[in-house]
Length: 191
Image 1 (cartoon, one colour):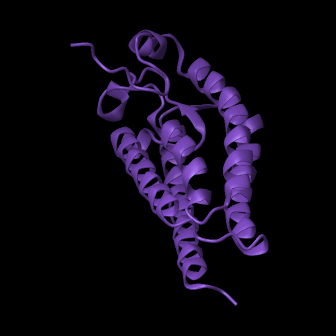
Image 2 (spheres, one colour; image 1 turned 120 degrees about the vertical axis):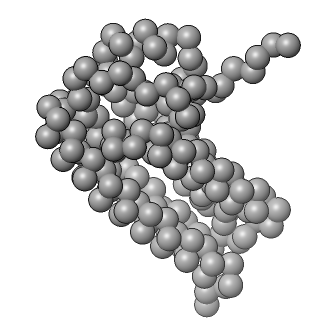
């Protein structure tokens, strides 16, 4: 028998799947625009793995909750939900800031200046920070701690490859613009 909290969690996960499908459609549209402007793609070898990894993450969240009968962890579950919502806000801030330059693939249009406003004023990779937070928080909403640990570790390895490929593709102008910005954790000004 499905509990109320399990049903709500399942509904949340279905919304997350729909959100991912919308993101993929947006990414496809933006990729077509980038290619029309002479965009060059990098990182194709790891992209398929990344898509499979994130798809499996969504399945694992639901699977652990239902197959291992994880109970809703009360206050910890609410805290995890709050963190997941913050992660989504950061993701959409990054996507909105990049506009039609945002893509789930690495496609660089030559001669475009790096985007240095929005969350990019503080970090090189705010979208990846959102992903890190989300992979840790979403499973913990309903106590799926194995999924949180395993996919957080897997994501660290994936980001190691992804960020190197992306920064190399973005080139010298990006390196100059972001040389003093941290990758993941914003610096707190000393006052």
